[in-house]
Length: 489
Image (cartoon, rainbow, N blue to C red; front, side):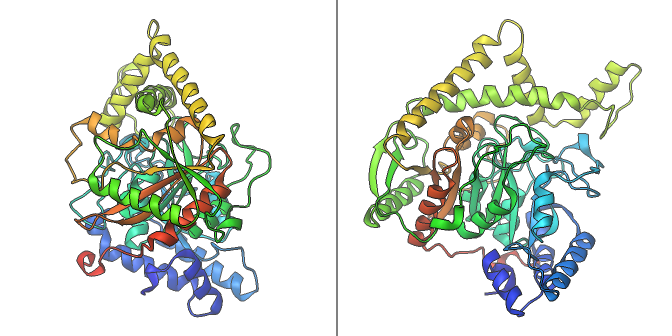
């Protein structure tokens, strides 16, 4: 195993044994980036100087007997919608080209406090609006398993970097599946925590009641350790959960014997690729053989959850993106009046998908349509929450495919928004109700492309979520990685 292929846990073990230094780990991921970036375009910015300084400090601290925890000295990538002091943060949009924040997002502060080395900022769909990372104003990212295919989105750059080995782990944001779906399509682990458990302070907002930051990693244990480093109450975030947090790594090795796991009836059938359905069915059978009780669960509102999501999310985006006006920061296109300046700036600064969602959201919130569209979507959201609550009265966790398909060819869906939106059909329900969800790789299809398995749990149910996910990982035995030689330049 080459150094860049190690998990965070494995790299940390090598670091503490003296086998390698943090600078060695950084060199390994930077070398990997030099080999893969021309084809993958996972990064928008590589902060080599800042990372080198942080790695040197991590090594000095260890030499002085200071160990800040499992992420100490580990190179981590950040999705470029999280503010980083002194490092350009664009949300992959022309309207924020050149914007350098004067502060760090809370998650960035917590990573630094944990001793992590921030290696760079990764590509994404503009303002996190997309499922393929083809909507970036700076060009698309590609999948390490097949560079003619998309890596998923909107956290596609973070997923591609972890899968390819140009980061040991990464943070993404998940509004409707934007961590879990790219994790599924690139053969890694991706976690959306319970809404409110990871601070959104410093995250450039898409839809504030849905957005949640979480880790992408090579293993379930890595995801658990990264989550523990970044979550916790933050007074700077008004939606931050302020009570007790569960001890997530506690049950990673306890298996699923005695748990009751529900298979969601509505997340199967037409539109799901046969290889995805068969792999998920095989894993459900394996969980049963491992001691879990498997039951079929019906969540009727799931059938209309996607429609509700694409009213709630654009409506909130319409409000959040009103701040980008050419006056305070970012792009400014001059006009003869203030109104003309704003109109020109927004017309030139926003890409077509962002414009589409702003228009959808503004229409849904407009006089005469608010109750029929946005109000009705919120009523569906309440009904969906009630469906989940009833399900969790009888089961400990719910499972489904993460994505109905494997990674599709670049360009295949970019001109078909409805088809693109349907790729989030399995993941957006968890965002609408605020519950945690995780994607774990369980195999490859006949083309050699990864398939993900989604586990969901009630709010603050990360402990049982990780327990099931760890057993899925053990049963799957998924150790495949993209072939290095095919990517090397």
